[in-house]
Amino acid sequence: MVVNGFETSLAALKGTTATASNANRFPEPGLASVDLLFSDGSRMRADYWRIIQGNRAGTSSFDHMQKYGLPAPINAFLEIARLLDGATVREATWNARTGDMMFQFESDTELQVFNFTGYEAWEIHFANGTGEYSPYAR
Image (cartoon, rainbow, N blue to C red):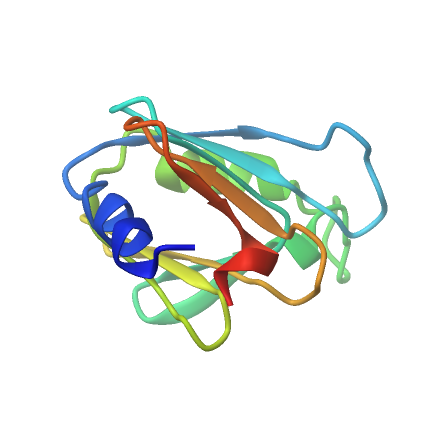
């Protein structure tokens, strides 16, 4: 992988807006894969993610369908869509050591996308025709 090209394509997402949708093609308990579509035509699938809002950890993919003593199970898809749909990317970065990605949005919201395993925990395809998969990003 050409890291500089990947980082440049990722940084170019600045100013785009995002739309989140359910990517659970093969639903598993505790898995809430999400597709993010960016207004420039780029797209990303993430299996493991967490929302940070107002400097506090919020909903994560691990919370999906968990009840935690609440009246109803958490729908992580509805929560990420509520927070990210139409939000503008302020910055998109990648951690070369872990393979994690971070997306800062103008709405004081951050999306952390994790690379926990050796399988494809995330994939991203950019409008310029390039893309990357999480295991190859390390």
